[in-house]
Amino acid sequence: MRPLRYAAIGVAGIAGAHFSDIAKRPNVEVVGLVDVNPESLAAAQARFPDAVAGADAETVLAATKPDLVSVCTPNRWHAPMTKLAMAHGANVACEKPMAMTLAEAREMEAVRAAADLVGYINFSYRNVAAFRFMRELIRQGELGTIHRVNAVYLQGWIGAGSVTAGWRNDKNLAGFGSLGDLGIHMIDAVRFITGAEVVSVVGQAVTRAPNMVDAAGKPVTATTDDNAAFLATLSDGATAVFETSQTAPGYTNHHRIEVSGERGTIIGISERPNEMAYYVGPTLTRYATWQGEIPWIRVPTGFMGTQKADGVALAVDAVRGLVTDYPKFADGVAAQVVVEAIDQAQRERRWVDIAGL
Ligand SMILES: NC(=O)c1ccc[n+]([C@@H]2O[C@H](COP(=O)([O-])OP(=O)(O)OC[C@H]3O[C@@H](n4cnc5c(N)ncnc54)[C@H](O)[C@@H]3O)[C@@H](O)[C@H]2O)c1
Image 1: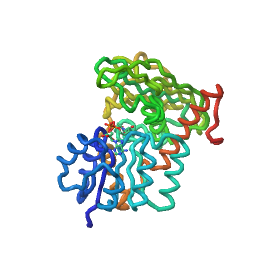
Image 2: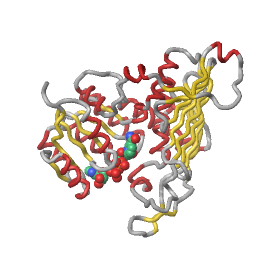
Image 3: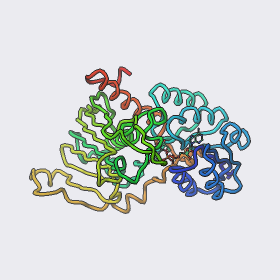
Image 4: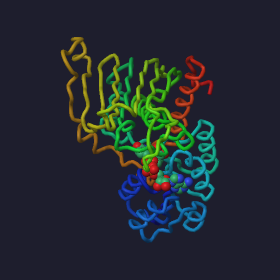
C-alpha cells in the first residue's frame, strides 16, 4: 500500500487528537505542518521531525502534496484553508463548526463535490459508544416512533477565574460561541442518533458573561454567545429541546441526549461513554411507570467491537475507499443550516423553516 501523505493546518489543541487518530491506521506519513504560532509549530515539529513545517499553508501544501489535510485552525480559517487544500488536490478532515456561515459551508461542499474529494467533519461525539448504541436501538425500531428528544451540552469555563479569553470569545474568529462550539455537536448528535432532520426551529443565543480578561490580565469583552437554547421539530414529527451553556459552573464537558419513543426511553452522556440509561421494550413499557431513575446498563462490548469509531482515522479509511459511513461535509452543512436558522429566528422573533434557507 502506498503511504498516505498527511498534513495538518493548525497544530495545537484538537490537532493532537487528529494526530492520535491517524496513528491508529498503518502507513500514514505526516509530511506537512502549518501554524502561524511558532511555539505550536515547534511542539508539533518535535513530534514529527521529518515533516515540512511553516506558517504559510500554500508553501507547505505545494512542497508536500498531501493526500489528506486536517484543518484545525480557529473557525475563521476553516473555509479558506479547506478550499486551498482542495485546490492542491487534497482530501480534507475539517474541524467543526464547518464554517462561519451557511454560505461558506455550502461553498466548501460545492468545491469538494466538484473535485470529487473526501470531506470529513470532526463531529467527535459520533465516537461515543452510548450514542452509537442509541442510534442502533432506534435504527432497529426498538423504540418505535420517536416522540421527544432532549439534548443538553454544558460547560463552565467562562467565568472560571483560571480561564482567559481566546479566539472562541471573538465573533470575528469563531462566528458563534456556545451555539457554534457546542450546539453544533448537539445538532449533529441528534441527527446521527435519531436519523431525523431538523425541519424548523425557534431559539436564542445570548451573552451572559461578556467581561473576561486576556492572558496578560487585560479586560476583554466577549463578542460571542455563551448560552443558547432552541426548540425544534424533527422530520419524524418529534419535538426536540436543546440547551447549551459555557457558563454553568460545575460542568466541564457534559453532553447528554435523551430520547423517548412509543416503546421506551434511552439516555446517553458523553462523560459516561460506555453506559446508557435504558428502559425499552413492549413488556417493560406496558407497566407504564418506573419509580425513580431509569436504570443504567453497560453498552454491550460485542456491539462496541463492531464499531468503527476511531475519529479522524475514518477520514483515512474514506480516502482509501474503505468506509462510506463517516461525518461528511454534507453533515457539516446540515448542522450549519440549523445554527443559521436559530440566528434568524432570534433576529426575527419567529419560527424558521429549514427548507427556506
Ligand atoms: N471536534 C471537537 O470535539 C473539537 C474540540 C476542540 C476544538 N475543536 C475545533 O478545532 C478548531 C481548533 O480549536 P483548538 O481548540 O484546537 O484551538 P487552538 O487555539 O488550541 O489551536 C488552533 C491553532 O491554529 C493556529 N492558527 C490560527 N490561525 C491560523 C492560520 N491562519 N493558519 C494556520 N494556523 C493557524 C493557532 O496558532 C493555534 O495553534 C476549532 O474549529 C474548534 O471548534 C473541535
